[in-house]
Length: 205
Image: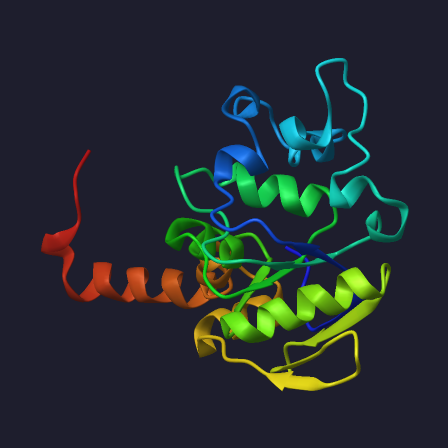
């Protein structure tokens, strides 16, 4: 997993509230394995028409926002069914950070497990940020996870909060499994010591 420390990138506004995970990646693509071309599934049914042509009205199809790696969203982004693929699709499309007033609980958890950073902000601030991004298409924002601040398109800085454990995992580029495996030598030593001191616990196969 790629470490997340500081991200400076184009940001795109998503104004619609209650964007569910099926809108982010339709259910029919869930059997697809992440890999080359996976980015095409991101917002597929609102991004492309029935012939596979881009819909020009969709924000990420507009030239200034195409390179966006940050989304600023409305309330309850990524609600609905549980699908880790929603995070995979966003990340395949280059999105590494989503800033908004609220998120679907499972999406929020899955983001951290896959190296993406969701930031919860006040609804009024999110609305101001989206308005500023509409007013200046292609504007950049900066997210500094080490300093726990992000900079809006107007240059104003805003502090944010992240659980300390999740922050450390993102900074290191580790999920829970990688973190556990980093202690593999200690685990082996503990198991060897336990087998010697408490042999009756050993399971015979």
